[in-house]
Image 1 (cartoon, rainbow, N blue to C red):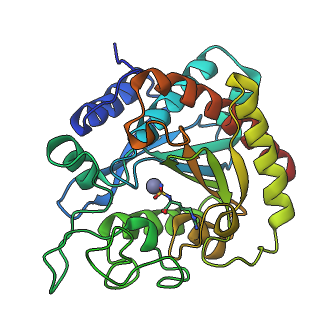
Image 2 (cartoon, protein in one colour; image 1 turned 45 degrees about the vertical axis):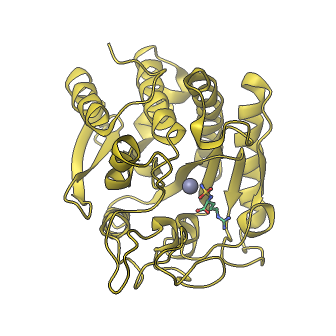
Length: 309
Ligand code: 0X9
Ligand code: ZN
């Protein structure tokens, strides 16, 4: 029996995916979208029901930043809950899994995540070397090929926000981008969420500029639904709005790529618990409440999207 209320090393997360697929073959399919710099599989799950009809798609991922352990833990908890709710004939989840495929990448940065268990709990970046520098790693959330290299992204390899030598230099980012681009030709993506920690924020485009995007009203209405869902569970407040203003400007990030490159209006960075008391070292007894509140936000938010797209 998998314990959702503890943090798990990479090998246990990979075993969890195998076990989930074996237990629910009609709901879960896993596949490898490519490899990390150190050669690890980027294992993505498709969670949905085959109806024989065309389906739209949602994407969410965890652990693009290695030390943000609550992110993959929340992704696993929510994935399991979605499956359990489908098995229990929950009407919203049944509707969603029949109309949509959820593509879920639990650990986007497996090399970094492993490194936080073995060497440095506070590692953030990838583990690829940099020419002419002794410093390792690129910030994968500065490496996407939309408005790469602008505000809030460093050109110094030793920086924790290093943008990389060129856009998509990081294998992990390149494979996510290629997968979503290719899959978009088959089924349109209506939502993209990149789960991070910490700060309790829901951040929409833009990240690279203070300018508000053309679709901001629609984004704002959806963020209100998601964060109302969060609040309804444990009364936690997650601030929301355009990333540059609510958080800080940062270029080459995932959500700007989702919206700017792919046209996915509902494209976000969600910063999970807490607001700084424990930060990245969030105690395990907060895994379940964090996941519970985000699950309600996610499901309510997906139902909202299905009604407006
Ligand atoms: O800096 C980041 O990549 C994210 N914060 S974190 O502490 N998890 O590293 C925030 C990205 C959100 N986008 C912008 N603030 N532009
Ligand atoms: Zn992060």
